[in-house]
Image (cartoon, rainbow, N blue to C red; front, side):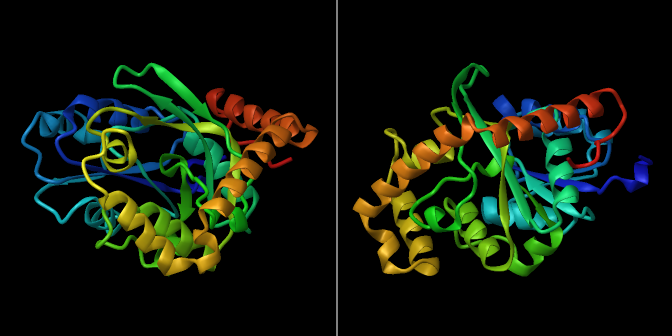
Length: 288
């Protein structure tokens, strides 16, 4: 495949004072085995060593800026305003992509045009990159997702048109903006789960998710914002704690059943072929 035949993928990293992890995030993008990536970094005016790290790689970054902003959602929206790619992803400055994540995502989006967004499984790592857990999900169910289902943000790749139709992120949201976006996407497009680890989410003391929902949370703002998003998109039935527990158990059983199915094994075999072909420099094979 010729270079200009590969869809351009735009990846945006919002960052603020994340020098401890930022370089690992940047390198995970720059070292992707996919040949056409437009990388954008939006820094919120960091006062640590972040700017020095960004400048170290600026010849491989399509656009970057460091200035005060109105939070993460605003920074991501600002980044995508500079995007020229057909496919989007955003990667927070403490997370990383697996080396073939973009190749795999593009393979699915080009092979299956009926899907507007794809996402994969998640590896949870600590501040030293040691694996803590691997979250393997079942196939996507819009119905079950409304009961509090989970979708790993860093592994998500979506079409530019879907982002446009959803009007980007709600800048009034600072914690559950990704869930709000997925629910908006579901109204205008289809989502698909790729049964392969595409990214790593970092668990550390200053991570926003840990501060908002974990044992070390400093306020109930995260839960309040999540409730606000749910009220915006779902009916009252989906707010039942008992039904949410049942839906969670159903999802766990689905994940186990699908993991050992023949269909899943065939799909993983195709993914491995895609990865092997990319690493051999032969491009992505046709869908099977």
